[in-house]
Image (cartoon, rainbow, N blue to C red; front, side, top):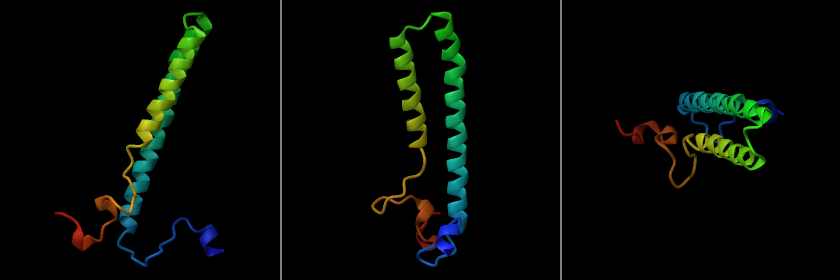
Length: 98
């Protein structure tokens, strides 16, 4: 029950990574807000064009695909959390470069 209701679960018992996890969460929130902004900008530009008849269905489909690709690439800018190439964010404090 504790795991189900917890905001974060530390599997290795190291408390020194909490600040790093908070930094990562702030970066993730920023990316999410940027993606909302990109999607809103897409809708602000393309919906009036479509209603006025300036956009063909093919142009609208291409613009929608471009919007989805842009949002996805922006989300990929988050630090990668892989065992093989973990960022400095998740290395122990002693091993970090100055």
